[in-house]
Amino acid sequence: MRTRNAQARLRRRIDEGKMLAPKKVKWRKMMKGRVRGAESRGLTLAFGDYGLKSLETCRIDTRALEAARIALTRHIKRGGRVWIRVFPDKPFTKKPAETRMGKGKGSPEGWVACVRPGRILFEMEGVDYATAKEAMRLAAHKLPIKTIMIQREEGGLGA
Amino acid sequence: METGELACEKRATRPKGQNNALRRNGRVPAILYGPTTAPMPLAIDRLELKARISAAAHTRIIKLKSSTAEIDGRYVIFKDVQRAPVSGEILHADLYEVDLKRPIRVEVALKFTGKAKGLANGGILAPLERTATVECLPLEIPDSIEVDVSEVDIHEVVHVSAVKFPGNVKPIFDTDYPVVTVLPPTVEEVVVAAVVEPVEGAVVEGAPVEGAAAAPAEGAAKEGGDKDKAAKKPEAAEKKK
Image 1 (cartoon, rainbow over the protein chains, first blue to last red):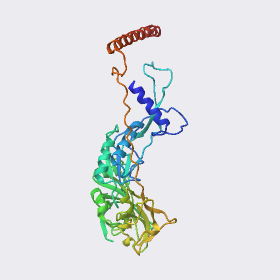
Image 2 (cartoon, helix red, strand yellow; image 1 turned 180 degrees about the vertical axis):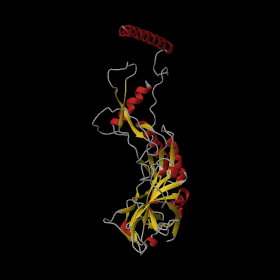
Image 3 (cartoon, chains in turn orange, purple; image 1 turned 90 degrees about the vertical axis):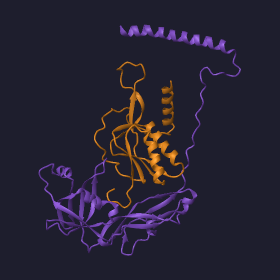
C-alpha cells in the first residue's frame, strides 16, 4: 500500500514538473541496454567550485537524484548555487504485482540517468569548503553509488 | 615570468602498445609541435610532469632538457593535457613550441579579489568566466589577472572591458562579455510538514462504544479476507488447467 502511494506521489510530482523528467519523448519505452566502461564526457567542473564525482556505474533514478539535490540545497540553505550535471532521460518499465510473465512489456514507471565512473553528478558554488564537503556527504548518502568530492584547482592547467 | 625545466626523451611510436608500456614504467607519452616544428613524440617522467602542470609551479614557459640535440633547449607551453576519467592521472600531454620574441594567445586565470558589496546583503558571487584570452610575449604571461569585485552589488556585472590588464598584456575579445556578477540570495526551500494519517485503531471523538465497534469490524475484515481468498482459488485452479 505504501509503495503504491509512493508511486502515485512520484507520478504526481513528475506531472507537476517538480521532478527531473523529460517533458516529451518520441518513444515511451526503451530497451534496458548496458552501461559499460568509463565516462568520456562531463569529467571536469564546468560551473561550480566543488563537485561530486561518480566512481561506479549505475542507473540513478529520479527519486535518488531529487533526494540528493534536496539534501544539498537544504544544507547550504541560502548560501550557494547547485547544478545537476546528469538528467534522467531513460524510461524504465515495471509489470504490475502478481502478474504472470509475458503479455508484453510493462508500463513506464519512472526515469533513470545512466552514469559511468568519472561523471560529475552535482556541482556547487558560493559556499566554503567545510559546508560544501558536508553537503556533498549528505547528498552522497542518497545515491546508490560510491562518489568522491572534487574541488577546482585555481590556475592549474588541464584541471 | 620564470621558466621551468622539464626533462624528456624522444620515444618510439612502434610497435603498438608502446605508450601503455611507458605509462606502466612511470612515464607519460607526449607530443611536441609548433608553427615551424614537425610533430615529435616524447616521453616525460610522470611525477615531474605533474609537478610542472600543477598550479603551484607558476611557470607557463618550459625549457626542455634532453640528451637529444634537436629537442634540448626548446621553449614550450602546455597546449593540452589528457587525464584518466576517474583517477585523474595524466595520460598524455601536448607541448607547443613558442618563439620567445613573438606574441602568443593564451588563457589566463581570473582571480576575484575583495569582498563584493552584494555579499553583505546575502548575494552570491557568481563568476561567469574563469579565464580570459590574452595576447602577449611568452615570457610576460601573467600568473593570473586580478578582478576587483568590492564595488559589485546584487545584479551588477563586471564586463571584460572593465578588467585592468597589465600594460604588456592585450585582452582578446569580440564582444564585451560579462566576467562576474552577484546573484540575489537563493530562496530557502520550505519544508512541508508531513500530513499525519489516521492510525488504525485510534480513538475517534464521538465514536460509540469502543469494544462493540472494533470487534465486528475485525470480524468483517477476517471474513472479507477469507472470501477474497476463496474467490481467488477457483481462478488460480482454472489458470493451472
